[in-house]
Amino acid sequence: MKYDIKDASLAPQGTKRIEWADRDMPVLSLVRERFAREKPLDGRKMSACLHITAETANLARTLKAGGADLVLCASNPLSTQDDVAAGLSIEYDIPVFAVRGEDRDTYYSHIEAAIAHRPSITMDDGADLVNVLHSKYPERAGEITASLEETTTGVIRLRAMAQAGALLFPVVAVNDATTKHLFDNRYGTGQSTIDGIIRATDALLAGKKFVISGYGWCGRGVATRARGMGAVVIITEVDPLRALEAAMDGFLVMPMKEAAAQGDIFVTVTGDMHIIREEHFRAMKDGAVVANSGHFNVEIDIEGLERIADEKNADIKELVDEYIIDGRRIYILGEGRLINLAAAHGHPASVMDMSFATQALVSEYAIQNSDILEPRVYDVPRSIEEWISRLKLESMGISIDTLTPEQEKYLSSYDMGT
Ligand code: ADE
Image (cartoon, rainbow, N blue to C red; front, side, top):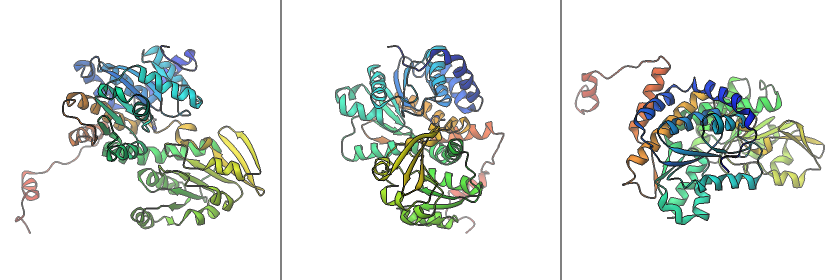
């Protein structure tokens, strides 16, 4: 099969959407222009397991402009934009294997299709492609120059694999680049999570008790946006430093057991499993709304909820399932899958601009350094990060100061002006 998409007739609509996003991705456009001239990825086979969105499409166009022979598959069954998948496969001739709402078997058959492409560079958002390569095709490891990982959850897993000596090829932790997590995780997740919850529920946030589990970059982003809309924000954490930071940022901090009884809206962004479970559902108020914005749908123990619920009414509204426990209604959004992509359009293009410019430049870096890369987790080189931030500032019409020679000397001395 050349590609597997929902409906080829959606291609013109998808193409418009891709072009619209591209207007807000000036840094990636500059990379694309250079890649088209220099062809740094010439003839390289690449497979990318990413959310199939308009922003990802512009990354794919950039890699193709650089000479890559690229296929894409979804990194989540509910995040695919079917019109974008059609636009990419048909108008841009970049094969996509992804259909929104695909079942587990189809999801994995699409990952298999990406592996059958025999890539030398892979990209992941959650490490599923790398996992299947390791578990089913370890003999192919020698073919992989490097794999690039886009998300916190994936990097945590890959570092664990490296630590255990189980990692078979080099990985670059794109997520850990400042140009990625400081902006995408904070401002991207912050805005798109609130967007997803509002689109799914039409709820007013002002005056609501909004419980956020996890105060990493994503949690910080959601918390400041929710506060900005008038919610009373409660943070739950397991890390004392992060909990302290949340408290000093002015948020209420408490264990989930307490928060469960108070919250109107709950969002998990921890990267861990069963953050909200039976004991918490039992304590919740009538009408509580529960969503997840972490990568995998394991943060909310929906199986536990199904066990204790007296009744389930699926799809009482698009992407809303109602569960009744002792007469109290609890609403689960998007089956516990990442709500920012299930109910909204994911992070805005302007922030994905930096994440995906980083991805594109790191793929070039991996090829240039293929001789020295070993099976471990690498950081993104500082020079790439600086280049991207300068160009992003420029595109925003912002200029900054430079050090005077006197200031440079002061910073490198230990006896001046003390
Ligand atoms: N992850 C979060 N938002 C995204 C988007 N718009 N495109 C691709 N991946 C994303």
